[in-house]
Image: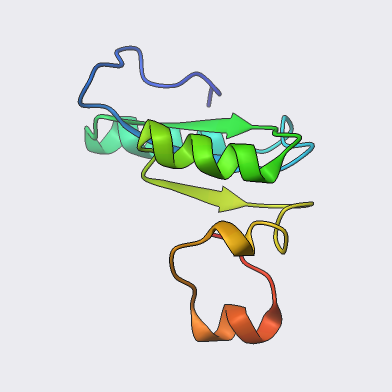
Length: 97
C-alpha cells in the first residue's frame, strides 16, 4: 500500500484529509487512497500538518475540502471553526472527524 494519492487529479477530484501535528506517520492516506482507487472514486486523501488551526480551517473551507479527520493536538482547538457538532462531541469537548 502506498501513500501516493490518485494518479490523476482534476477539477472533479474530491479532497479529504487528516490534520494533526505530527501526522506524517499516519496510515490514513494510504488506507483511504487504496479504498478510493479500489472503488473507482475520483477522490484523494492527504495529510496536513498545520501550525495554525484557524488558518487551516479557513483553508479547508476555501479549497472545498469535503472532510477531514482530526488528531492531536487539534481535537479540541478545532471546535470553534466547526459548522456543526454532534451532541456527544460537545459533551466530550473533542472531535475526530
